[in-house]
Image 1 (cartoon, rainbow, N blue to C red):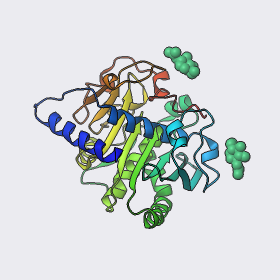
Image 2: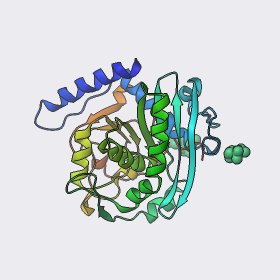
Image 3: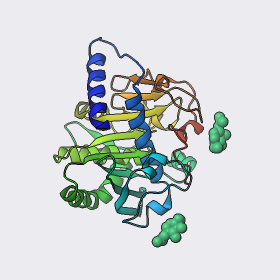
Image 4: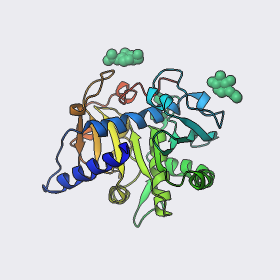
Length: 292
Ligand SMILES: *[C@@H]1O[C@H](CO)[C@@H](O)[C@H](O)[C@H]1NC(C)=O
Ligand SMILES: *[C@@H]1O[C@H](CO)[C@@H](O)[C@H](O)[C@H]1NC(C)=O
């Protein structure tokens, strides 16, 4: 029911945002904040190794950063941790009986500064949409697990046919969640997408396409460096809307701290901040990679 109310709010917000000709910003409701917090905790849980090596167990974050997930009735249907040449693709698919959710969560990189330093800016054609180009490494990372994820999701949906399917992740995990979610939507699945500190994943045609698919909550934090990468000057863009958290590191986030920034590739939120910051990448409503 929480989700249904949330959907209503989000649709209303989209309509309000569509009226003026230029992008607008506004703060969010507590329902929206609750959802952003819940899925931030699901993203955080994929940094905890005990959620990656024991399919069938409840989710547990030793670092104490996923209390809402731990108090829900969860069990994982698949846990995975694959080392690929594009990066480690790790995470879990979990059933949440309390909130009637199937959540696929992808972990970010375990060595952030190395990952940032090694991030390449290559684009490649993808069949996701016409004129769409994607970040080569992120796309290939998704492709290494695409068949596996699809088969696990198919079997989960047989048991939990009335559950809402959600993809989430932080950082590199957010990029995989977005490209995977877009690919599965193209294949007819309904996917809600919650991303935290997501890098740019493709060109403007892709950003427009993802924006049009909607059901996207792309969260950024102050001047976090990662959503600024790869740079727009290399042909990359971001989908809309952006939920921009404007309060500082380690600060409890209130609805008034979140601005909804409309517009593909907008510079009204994180992208327009002058100094890229690495520490802001760790604070996404909570210390999102505390389990590292
Ligand atoms: C899974 O990982 C956790 C945390 O690293 C570890 O304590 C546990 O022994 C591992 N379990 C298995 C079954 O490998
Ligand atoms: C926020 O918390 C982290 C982890 O406890 C700490 O390393 C960092 O210095 C804190 N940042 C600020 C601005 O207080």
